[in-house]
Each structure stands twice: as structure tokens, then as C-alpha cells.
Length: 491
Ligand code: AHR
Image (tube, rainbow, N blue to C red; front, top):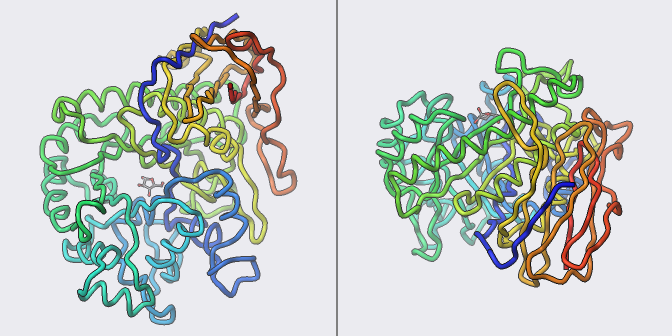
């Protein structure tokens, strides 16, 4: 029997809702088809945004959306995506699949999408191939209330009021596709560009500025940027779970148990990686003013056979759900320093929560994890601990059970437990310190490691009520199946 202790007397940190953010790039069928179909499409839409995707994402509790990239951000010239549709530039998306980008989804459309989703906005600016003036003018266009050339242009294009830009990224992956900078050189460029990202409407509407952070274990990038960049609010780490390495990523659906364990242990590595980057950040920023952002994370496998390799379209199994569940639990535990995270990517790309096929749409196992975990948003993380035996795979040791617990304003405790083992059913005895438990409800997501939802069988994997537990005076005793995630709501 494993022991699970939750201490509601020890509230650790607020779990910022934006840890549950998503990322959407002009890449493959993420924006075009997955989210935006245009007003004249036979697919039901409101102002061009497809209703099925928007409704599902609202249900999932999407708090914030990052756009327009990714690598696309450092090639994106925002003025190509405003004004009458017929005048917008058509060009080739050279980075992703060599297809025509007609710029029909631009700034106005992004804010309309976020309005429909009811989520906050994270815009990623172009430092790699754009000018300081271009970045500065974009911010002026989006956020200035007064009279100015860019604010007037926005009004001419039909939008009177400025929008709210909650987060602004000053470049993306500037160690690679964003210009191949050395870290200190990027830090200097960040300072130059960021100076002209103005807070037009006073400190009340301060734009939260994000510097391009490290790739996975590249600690020298963190060191160099923290040394040289000033006035940043967040540093953006990217970490993809690529179990095979980049040369042969393997199939998203056809894999064996070894590959499953290699995937979950690779995902688990993010915990150590976060800790090491934070150690470096804290040395340069002892008052911990700069947050860690993880604005790209998730699994990256080979594309589905017969699809454009530049579109990064992959299926999504219970293995992906386990990666999502354990990663979000890790992010919750680091919520004192992680302010936002954005899974890559929201629809039809990499570890997507939604897949579409023409007018058809399905929810992936990863979608259900986000939906199960949405109650953690803006709660206080609680001190908690679970005993567990471990998995060992290629020099990584990780516990089979990974959990986090939080409490909401009404005193309801939410606990999400991931059992990553493929064959161990776990008996768990949970005790909640100094508490009398009156009511518990629970939900389960489980299946075989390679189960997924196809367009022929859309509900193969989905959450179901979980009943294999007994309430005790101060907690519960539960029987948690292998390859599963359980969420408890405890009153
Ligand atoms: O998410 C796909 C790509 O991965 C992004 O465009 C880039 O930032 C990263 O390398």
C-alpha cells in the first residue's frame, strides 16, 4: 500500500492558470483548418473560427494562447496580415511545408479567436528577421488608445479599442531558427528591441515581456541571457519529449513497452532541467523577479504516414496522456517559479489536444488530461507526498506515481495522480492532515498505452467516473489501475 499525505495547512504557491496554456503556430493545419476556416466555409463557424474547436477549447478551460510561432514568429511580418483580405500578401511558408500562406489569419483574427475562447493573449514578436521599428509598431497598433499612426491604422481596419496583450515574446528560439545568436548577443538584442516595446497605457497595462530561453539542457544559454538581458519578466524554456532522438523519432501509435518507458522517463527529465535552469536564474536574479515560462513542451514523434513532413501531424495515445499528466503535475509543483506553459501545439500539430479532418473533429487523450486538471487553475498548491517504487530507463530513475494537490477558495482539494506503470495496480492510502472528509468524487482516464481516438472511433479514450475507492475519516483508500490518471475532488 502506498502512502499519500496532503497537508492543507501548508499552502505553497499559487498555480497560475496560464500553466495550462496552449500554443498555435502557422504550421500545417493548426491555424488554417484546425481553428480558422474563413467566414464562407461550410464548416460551422463564427467570424471564420470553427465552432467545434472553439467550444471544445472553452470546455477544456484554455486560459492563454501563444501565437503566431514558433519559428514562424521570426519570419512573420505583421503588416502582411492586416487590412482588406484581398490586399493581403500571399507568400510561401518556407519553414513549414512550403505551402501558401495567404495571411487571412492575422492580428485582428487572433484577437477575435481569443475573444471567442475567453482566453488571455500571448503574442510572439519577430526579432530574427524583423526590425525594432516593426516590433515597436505592432505593439503600438495593438495596444495604444490615443492618436498615433498605428492606432489610427487599427481604427481604419475596423477596431476602435486597443486590445490587451497579456504576454509579449521578444523573439523565439533565437539560439536556432530565430537567428542563430550567441546568448550574450541575443541578450543585447533583447534589450534593444524590448526598449521599444512600450507600455502605452501606463503601468496598469504593463506588457509582460518574455525573452527567448534555452533549449532543454542548454544551461549556457540561460547563463548568457540572464547575464546580459535587462527588464525581462520571463525566460522561455523549450523542452520536447523526443525519446528516440531527432534522427528517428518513432511512430506516435506503434511502439513497444521499452519505448513507452523511454518516453515517460524522457518527459520526467524536465523536473531536473527546470531545477537547474532555476538555480542559474536565481544566481543572477536573487529576488526571483524573472519567472520561468515553458512556452513549448510535449511529445514529438514521426509524422503520420502520407502526411506532409513539414506539417508535424501526429496521432495521440494514452502514452501522450501520461506525458501530459506527469508534466502538468511537475509544473504545479514548480508553480512558485513557473508562470506559464504552452503545450505544442493546440490543434493538428505535435501533441495536440484536438485533431480535425475536414469538417470532422476529435478530442485526444491529452485533451482529457487538460480538462481533468483545469480545477487546479489559480488554486494554491498544497504540500503533498506520495511513496512509490521506481522505473529505471537509460539512466533516468522516476517514481511510478506522480501527483500534485491544490486547494480552491472554497476549501475543495483537488488531487491528480498519474500511475505510469504498465502493469502495477496501486493501492493508495491518502491522509489529509487535520481534516474531516465528508465527500469525494473522482474521475479516471485509462487505457492501453497505445490506445487513441480515431475518426472512426472518437471515444475510445475518454474520462469516466472513478469508483474504486473508499472514503475514510481523513482521506481515502483507492485502487489505481496501471497506465492511468485519477483526479479526486475532496470536500
Ligand atoms: O513547435 C514546432 C517548432 O518547434 C516551433 O516552431 C519551434 O519554436 C520549435 O523548434
